[in-house]
Length: 102
Image 1: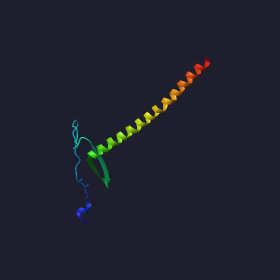
Image 2: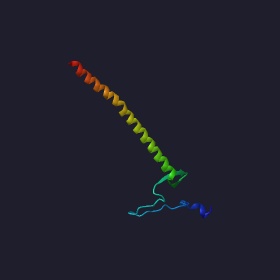
Image 3: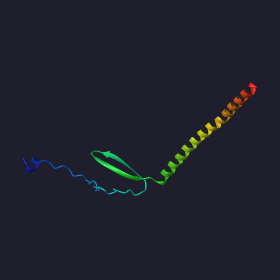
């Protein structure tokens, strides 16, 4: 028996060390003003990717917001336009009933 096989093997060191941020420090700063992080686990390790949002994402978000606002506005306008003739008919019916009593 050899001496090497009797010793326990030391644990494997990670290939990259995590960054330790002291208390009170703001932490890592992303490159852009807005950012998203995604993580994916591979085996026992963990990979983290930082991605910045581009102008196409901003344009698409503003387009969707405008489309949603237009739909809500159209529904509210349709509701108001529906109640105009209904309220005129109710007012005419009340006026007609007062005129018929005399």
